[in-house]
Image (cartoon, rainbow, N blue to C red; front, side, top):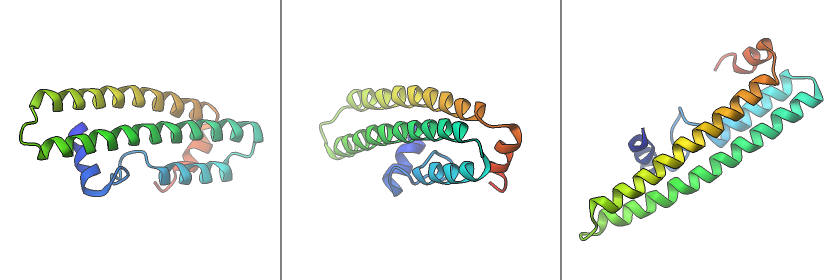
Length: 126
């Protein structure tokens, strides 16, 4: 999975993948949720969770870009060793696992603010 992220990053930037969480996906979700959920307290809670997801995305994208730049430099450096590159990949993988855990927490916090019908309406046609 990490290799796929790096390939996507190098070929099209950090938001190149269609299956990964992107800023556009968060904006679209927020817009749909605001139209479906009418209770102001619940929509406020959802908005805060989406903002936290956005923050997670920004932090991880920065880590991905930093690792990508470093690896690109290492790939072109004849004297670079595999161990150093692997350390960077391992650190990025750990950041990915931790970020995904937090993202899942936010996802379930959002779900807890929505009825099954609201949830279905937000994702209808997706």
